[in-house]
Length: 427
Ligand code: PLP
Picture 1 (cartoon, rainbow, N blue to C red):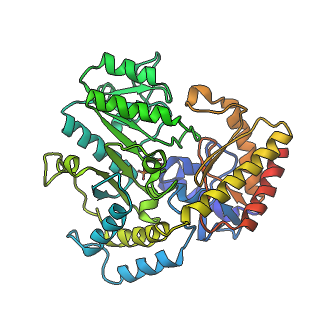
Picture 2: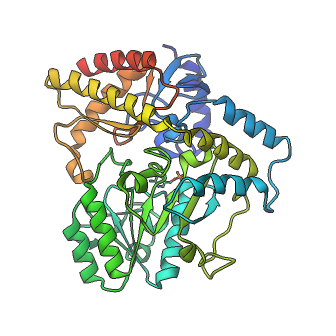
């Protein structure tokens, strides 16, 4: 498999962009080789610039639940683009996407469109602070919420700590407003509320944590978060940038039947275009400008072409039976890899929910983050990733990243992928 053209482009891109990329994980730093430059995609497949074809499980990091180059999305986007790219004034198409979402999701009553998941979370945090008139945010170790200063924070030592910045350029004073605790540990959350009585504006969680592997939480833990935040008059924010429209149209809120106060969306909502959103009850959303005092704006927010892609994608997802088929085939796929690995006593565990899966090189189920994930397992992932790539299977280039299955992955694609995965595991 030649990767000559990708290698040439990478040499050039390193002159233009830090590390040669426009988002760090794309640089293949934690796996072997140089990044593949992608030429095109169709359904479950992508082709690199050297003409190599791959079955794709990265799906642009989640948005492409209908696979690549979906004809309905393409048509709606082109039809909309013929009328102009952006107006910075209200358009009917924003109403159309909002209606489609709100009619099919009982967990939010109003929403605001933004242009990325990061922006959605940043705005949700400001809204929570403005609404509660408190400053501190409680987050969980291992949850990623975009590159927002106050959330680029990792756990310090101890059960309940102020966070420590996890990026240069984030002032310590920002990190001081963020409390970081372990996932799936309600005692730590209770302790934090005790120590910072009446100071915590919101608890933010990925209800299906999928950025440090797939760390499925006990439903009782999520319910306990709901209970304690209600009791303490703090808001509960579900960051559903990955899980929203992925595990069901109503995301994790619907999956667990838990009503958070604010929900953030991204990825799938934009059908592959840059869209994010945050939503809540009418009462909470009334605090957002120009109705309320919490300022939030965007030149390209609600961009018509991005809305068009979202409408075309979400229309498909709202059809009955869509998620059942997708989730069933993912479950079968994950179970058969698990059976294969277990039969050979490999230290491999497949976590799966909806159409998300994570191949972990461990023998224990994980519900918490880094401290539980053995770095040696990432060495195993490196080899696995290289061998899969050599066999035409594309996974995101990091062992902490989950895989996604789209509606276009056929039984045959999944059989072909499994054979390659089995070979890669055998090495
Ligand atoms: N929140 C979660 C849960 C995410 O997974 C991500 C991105 O992966 C973000 C927020 C940030 O979204 P974006 O990359 O669109 O800014």
